[in-house]
Image (cartoon, rainbow, N blue to C red; front, side, top):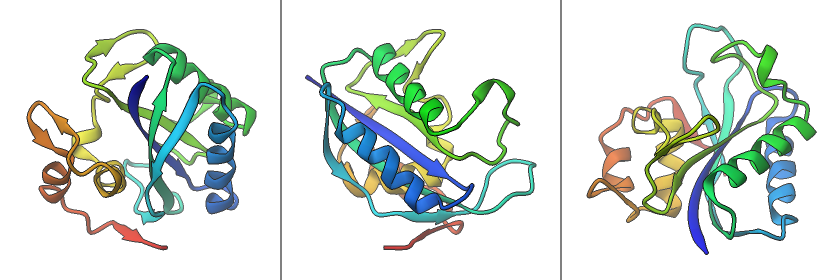
Length: 160
C-alpha cells in the first residue's frame, strides 16, 4: 500500500456537488481507500483567464496502484464527469480537476504524471487543504504545514 495526496477542484456548474461526486467515484474504487478529506475551500483562480472562483479540497489516499495507474484512474474520473483535457484552455475553467500531488516519497517524471507535482509548492489552493489533512508529510525535509504557512493564502477561504 502506498500513500498519496490528491488535489480536487471545480468551478463550473455546482462545484461542491461535483467534488462530492468525484469523491464518491474514488470511494467506490476497490484499489483506493480515502484516509482523510480536507475541508472545502473557495479559491481565487490562478492565471490569465477570467473565470469564477474554484472550490478546492484535498484527499489523503492509500492505494495499491502505482503512480501512473492512479493518475490514469483520476483522468478516467475526469472524463466520466465531462472534462475534456485535450480541448481545454490552459488555466481555464474546469468542471473537475483531479491532480496527483504526492505519492509516498516517489520522484518520477513520466508522460502521465510528474511527482511531486511540479507547481504544488506555489499554490495555496493545493497546499492549504493538503496541510490540513497531512501537516507533517515532508517533502525534501519540509513539512506541508511549513510550505503552506510560507504562502500568501489570501485567495483561499474555508467554506465548511
